[in-house]
Every structure is written in C-alpha cells, then in structure tokens.
Image (cartoon, rainbow, N blue to C red; front, side, top):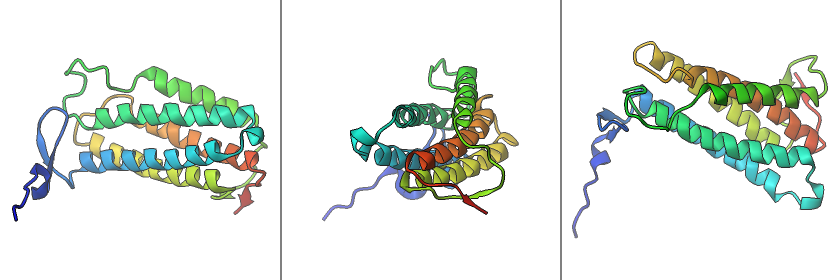
Amino acid sequence: MTTSIHRGDGGETQLLGGQRVRKDDLRIECVGSVDELSSFLGLARAVLVAQEPAQRRPQAEALIAWLARIQHELYLLGADLAKREVGRDGSQMHLLPEHVSALDREIDGVDAGLPKLRSFILPGGGVAAGHLHVARAVCRRVERQAVALASTENLGVEVVPYLNRLSLALFSMARQAAVLSGELDDRA
C-alpha cells in the first residue's frame, strides 16, 4: 500500500502569489471564513429557490439574484485576501468601489420596503432568514479578522468597507426574507 503525500499535509498552504503560509495564518482564517459565509448564502438562496414559483414575489426573485451576485463578489474578496501583493499582479480579481456603492443602494432599497425597526430583533424569521442571520454573524467575524489582518499586512482598500456594508445588507435581507415567509421579527 502506498501513501500519498500532499503539499498541505504539513499544515501549510499557498497564497495566490505563490508564498507558502501556515494554515492557521490570519489571512487563511479570513479566506476560510469568507468560504463559510458564501456557503450560508448558498443555503439561504437554495431555500428561496425551493419555494413554489407561484409563491415567489418579485422581491424574492430580486433577493435570489442579489445573493448569487454577492457570492460572486465574495469570490473576488477571497482573491483579495489570498494575495499579499495588493494591486501588483495585474489581476482583475478584486473588489472595486462600485461593489461597495451597489450594496449601499440595495440596502436603502430593501429597507424602504420594510417596517421601521423600533427595537432589537432576535435572529430567526423562517429558514432563509435564519441562514441570512448566521451569514451576517459570520460576515462580522470576517470583518474583525480583516481589520486585525490590515493592522499588520496590506489588504485591498475595499475589503473592510465591503464587509461592513455586507453585514448591514445581510441584516436587511434577513428581515426581508422573514417578511416574504410571513414571519414577523421576534423582538428582543
């Protein structure tokens, strides 16, 4: 019996620029958390897609499209995090100011259609909303990790602002998903 040895078996992995780092490096922790975040968004999207088409409203279709787009943007964010040489590789794989401003516009649009928030709410409000609340909490963790990383290493300039807006967007999206499922926000 032969044993296969893989390069990652020693506890290291490779960044986009070719540098080898330990798998517990904060940069790799951020990349892994972004993957986790995208997975929760995929769960929320799958729940929304699984609803009978007759039950879908234009807001649900918009939410499904928005989640898909954000998952693509998280791929760009992961690429930003997986390289140490910010902006020097000529790559088109990075977040842009337009990604942040798009989140701002969409937050405003979603919030305009929701009841005024007058108190803290408990995460919940149906399956899709629950997944979006978990995604929001994971996003806040990624943001904290990125802030810590930015204190010692270079990051793309849009990484932290994007994560900050995304967590706000996910909160609004969770509330919208709760409304779409007929659930009310549980008050704290």
